[in-house]
Structure formats: structure tokens, C-alpha cells
Picture 1: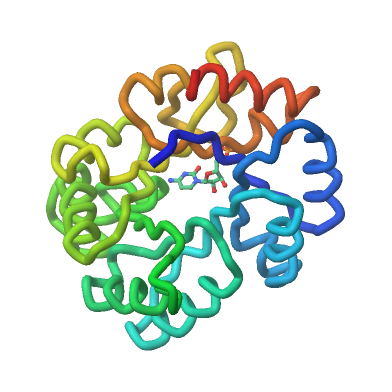
Picture 2: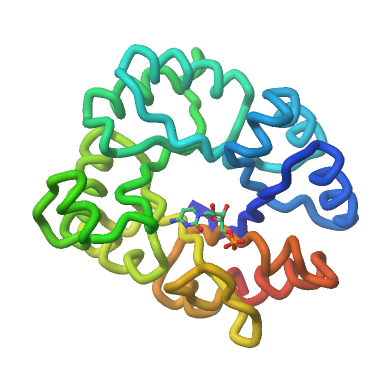
Length: 232
Ligand code: C5P
């Protein structure tokens, strides 16, 4: 898997996302489209961004019964996205159904990664509300192993977990890591952060970077700085 910087396009309208992407004249960054933009602008937004030559990570985090996920994934594969995701908590049966739905007639399919535990879920909440009484790191690794067994390509994880995931699941199992900040930048609401250079050092395969690029005075320069630090 090639290392790349994915820009989280957390905008709420088509106009905003295009105004942002128009700033890029020489490169076509890999972009992440999340629920907000997808629900606001619909599947057309994916087709339009794709037509402009960008790779797309469609971050919809599917979690439902296997048959429903299989059919929804079939729709996403036809949208020609490059990467998409689901919740590993949906179990192996759901993940296997997702792969079946995503696989196109010619055998190709988008990269499929799993969310293990959301970073907003603390160990305490996991124990008290979800009744999962194990340390959160073991749960994350166990869910990553389940995802690998079900045939997925990787997981979304914090940069701090990427090394462990590779140790347990192998280096070809993809780690996609958000929570990236420049050494001299604002941290905002992210708690555990790493610089692009540190993310490279610990072996992340893809970094997902939102505000440090989208809110920068010069987004193109910020993107280039990320690529220079992370891809080299
Ligand atoms: O602006 P920022 O760089 O914090 O954006 C990070 C992106 O990654 C956002 O789209 C956020 O929803 C997503 N993300 C995250 N932490 C996770 C999973 C996804 O920050 N654990």
C-alpha cells in the first residue's frame, strides 16, 4: 500500500468543498468524505470529486445486519470510491458480507478498513455502558485481528496504536491514522496527536489530516508540508 496523506474534507456543502479543492492546481490529493458532506450533498458529490481526479475515502462507518451492509457496500463500490469503512463491532459475519458486496464483477474492490473502538469511547464508558470489561488497547487489537481474519485490509487507529497493530497483524495490514498535527500547530479538540513525521516513523500507512490543512492560511502549502514530512 502506498503511503499517502488523506485530507478530511469536513465541509457541509458542495460549494465549500469545491472552493477548497479549487485551490489545488498541481496536485490531486486523496480526500476523505464523511457523513456530514455525504448526507448533505448526496452520492453525486462522490462522483463529481472523483471526476476531478481525486481518490476518495468514503468514511460512513457502516454497522448493520450482514445483508444490509452487503447491499449498501455494493452501492458504494459502484460509486467507485477507493477506500471505505465499517465498525468491526458488527462482527465477522457483517465484515465478510461487506467484502462480498464491495467486490466488483471484475474482482476489484475498494480498500476496506474497520473502526475498532472510536477514540471518543473511553475505557470507562466501554466497561460501564457497553459491558466490555477488558483494557481498551486489548479490545482495539482484538477487533483489528477479527477484521484481518474476516479479510479486511486494515483499521483506522490512533497513531499511537499503529505500531502495535502492525506487530500483531503484519506490516501489510493497513493503518489509517487521524489525530495528526504540525509540531508548531494548534491541537484543537484532538487529545493524542502526532506530527506527520512521527506518524511516518511509527509506520502509519495513511494519515488523515483535516483542520491543519483545511483551516490553514495556505492549504496547498500545508498539504505539501504534510506530504514532505510523511511521504518524504
Ligand atoms: O481536523 P482533524 O485533523 O482533527 O480531522 C480529523 C478527521 O479524522 C476528522 O474527519 C475526524 O472525524 C476523523 N477521525 C478522528 N479520530 C478518529 C476517527 C476519525 O479524528 N478516531
